[in-house]
Image 1 (cartoon, rainbow, N blue to C red):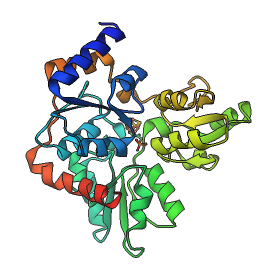
Image 2: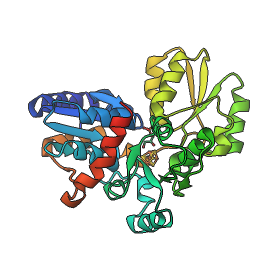
Image 3: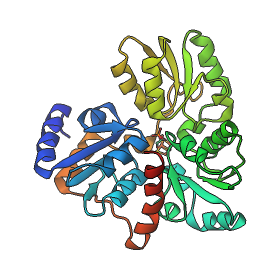
Length: 310
Ligand code: 13P
Ligand code: SF4
């Protein structure tokens, strides 16, 4: 394999030749974030995929993110460094079972987290991300029943915060669900001056101790504006790279998963290596496509989300 410097060089040449836009999620490895044109959370990356003049989109993230980019750009080539990088949360909601769940609540409006497959999006009314979920649900009349899928922790957080009963699919993100109260409290005791900040995909037993809860982007902005000098960060630690870059003087402590694991990593996000990113551009493969029969139905809730969160 080539050294990072050599890969940076080659990727930059290919980027110009292909008129490519490289998008990377904050949970990818630092060298992939370094080479990306835009690094962001799920919403920022969906927006970047919607509005750009590139011919090729290279998506360093997980499958549903590249799929969303393809739905927004059916005419463009969408590449992923590793097309096996799926999201277990998205995969925890199989379409056959989800159809049955919908049949139990036929009057409900279906709001689905962007961490879902195209098939599930095609069965949904509105997509949301952790950045805009609250804003979107606030626009739905109170008497309108809601199905929320697939993340039970985010769904529970929203239901409590907005005082709204929702029918919630019981999926979760293994990365965020791994944080538990005893180890979080231990970290707080070890770092008494640090502020605990958490992603809403974490359990309630963790969220209840956090002084700030928000999407990856919101957590990042909070660490910049807060007067605190140190933070215990209960989300995927890939975001620490950008946090540290923006606030070099502050201290960032990844929240521990248990006694032996000081981090909770998303293995799928880490499958996006710099080497694979280079190879996918060079080979123009693996290419991401969405079956034609799903395209318009899966795009509809994404468009509604973008319209409602403009
Ligand atoms: P956000 O990017 O919306 O913070 O979601 C986190 C996540 O788990 C992405 O897969
Ligand atoms: Fe999926 Fe969780 Fe990984 Fe995000 S962090 S891609 S929700 S498994």
